[in-house]
Image (cartoon, rainbow, N blue to C red):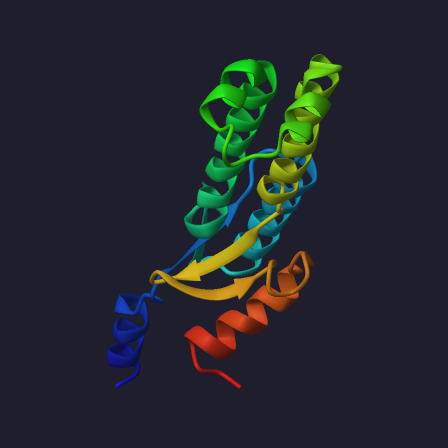
Amino acid sequence: MNDNNKNCDDNYKEEEIKLIIKYTKKSNLIINHFNQLKESVEAENKNIVIIGEDYKLEGTRKKISYMIVALQLILSGTVTCSDSVIYLTRNYIPRSFFDWTYKNKIIKVVSIFLIGNFINSIINNIQPFEIFYDEKLIWSGIKHNGRLIRPKELIKIIQKKILNIK
C-alpha cells in the first residue's frame, strides 16, 4: 500500500498556473518591478509561470487620443489659413476671432500643439500593471491608484481567487 501511495505521488503534478501581466514597457520602474515580481514568485512557487505583455492603449482612451490629434490639425490649419477660412465661414464665425488669430500665427500654432500634446501625454502615460488568469482580470494597478503589487500579495490573490484557498 505504501508503494501504491508513492506511485500516486510521483504521478501527481501540480497544475501549472499561467499568469499574464500586461504592463507598459515605456517605464524602467515598471519593467524592473515586473522582473522582480516574476523572479520572486516563480522562485517561491514552481507551478506559477508569469508572462509579460506590452499594454496596448485601447478603447476610449485611444479614440480620445486620435480626436485630440485631429483637433490639433484642424485648429492649426484654421489658424494658418485664416483668410480662406474667413471667406468660407463668413456667416458662421465672428470676424473678430479670425482677426485675433491672424496676428502671431506661429505662437498660436505652437500653443495648439503644446496643449494638445500635453493632454495626449496625460492620456497615454498611464502606468498600467494588470494581471490576468484565463483572460480574467485578477488585479489592476489602475484600480489601485497606480500602486504596484507585492510578490506576497500576488501569492495570496492566487491562493484566494485561483486555488480557492482561504
